[in-house]
Amino acid sequence: MSLEQKIMTELKAAMLAKNEAALRSLRAVKAAILLAKTSEGARGDLTEDDEIKLLQKLVKQRKDSLEIFQQQNRSDLAQKEQEEITVIEKFLPAQLTAEEIKAELAKIIVATGASSPADMGKVMGAATKQLAGKADGKTISALVKELLNK
Image (cartoon, rainbow, N blue to C red; front, side, top):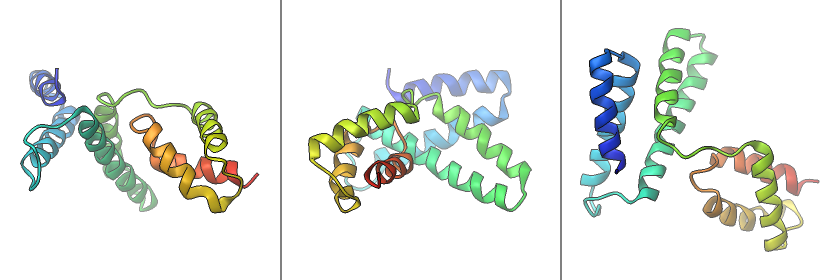
C-alpha cells in the first residue's frame, strides 16, 4: 500500500473520529504528496525513498516551528506542532537511537578513513546515504562532529 493510500485511509478514520490534530496533519501530508506528484519534473508517482524524504521534510518543518514557538512562549501553537509531528512520524520508519547511530557512524568513519574534523564531508556523504530515513540529518551531523573531534 502506497503512502498516499495509507494517508487516505487514516484521513477517513480521523474524520469519523473527529480527531482535529490528525485531520490537520494528514491533510498537510496529502497536500505535500499532491504537490510532489504534480511538480515540474515529477514522474507522476513517488518512490518509497521520495515518500520518506517528503515525510522527513514535513517533520523537520514542524520541529523548526515548534522550537520557535517554544522560544516565544506560545504553548498553544507549540502543542499543535507537536501533535502534527506525532501523527506524521507514524508513517516514517523507526528512527535509530543515538547509540545505534554512533555505532553506524564509527563503522563509516573506519571505512572512509576519516581521522579529523576536516574529513567530515566524506563521512557525512556516506552517512546520509546509509542512514537515510532512519536518522535526522541534524543528529547525524552533531554525532559526526563529536566522533571526529575525539
